[in-house]
Length: 76
Image (cartoon, rainbow, N blue to C red):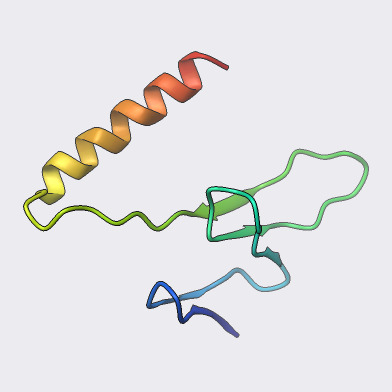
């Protein structure tokens, strides 16, 4: 069954059997993750919808996202 976000106008087919969370106080609109046992590592997909200005190109947005992820993961 597909997950639909009416607020952000997208639909995605999540992996079968995965758990769906719609965090209230998080930056993410929806999180899908695999059910695990015995404290195994978790596989997850986090979807975050961001509004940009009309004059932002896809290339500029992609570069901004790359820079944000590099900072986030270099500081962890």
